[in-house]
Amino acid sequence: MTSTNKLLWCTIGLGLGLALMGTFTWAQPPSDSNVLFDAPGLIVKKPKPGLPEVKAQPQTWPRLDAGAVLCRTEDDLDRLAARRRGEPVAGPIGCQILHGVTPIAIVQRKRLGRTEVRTIDPQAGGLGWTDVWLPERPSAAAAR
Image 1 (cartoon, one colour):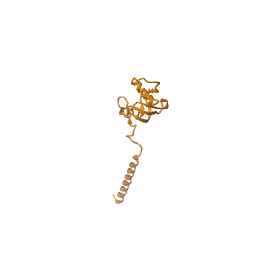
Image 2: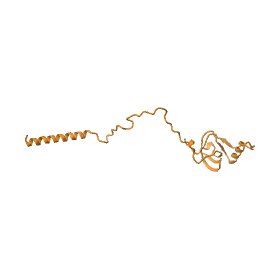
Image 3: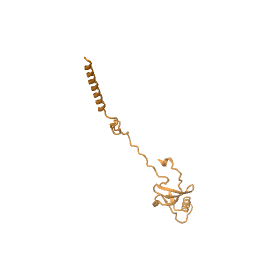
Image 4: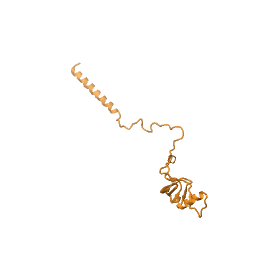
């Protein structure tokens, strides 16, 4: 073989090699081709056996629970306490027993078992006094 033939064959081989290398790099998809094999929803996860977990709704605080007493005045609250002790009481007592959970705002704390509150819903009683002990923060049981 002559040197011209060698040069010709080397040039052809180099050109063919570059052409094939360019073809292989062109055939591969770019890295951001939006083909993800671990994409969410591609593989359906089986649900856990048993009942689904239901999260409790947060409860309002402060609140008066069902059965709490709401009196119109502090004097009404005193007369209710006297009647509960069995003492004779003159006149009607302006108190009501609440039948459901009632959200409130604390107006003032006079002493233990004597708190002035305002119901959030005016139809539930409005401004009044209660003998319910209302802590500053809800208890762990009430927060659940």
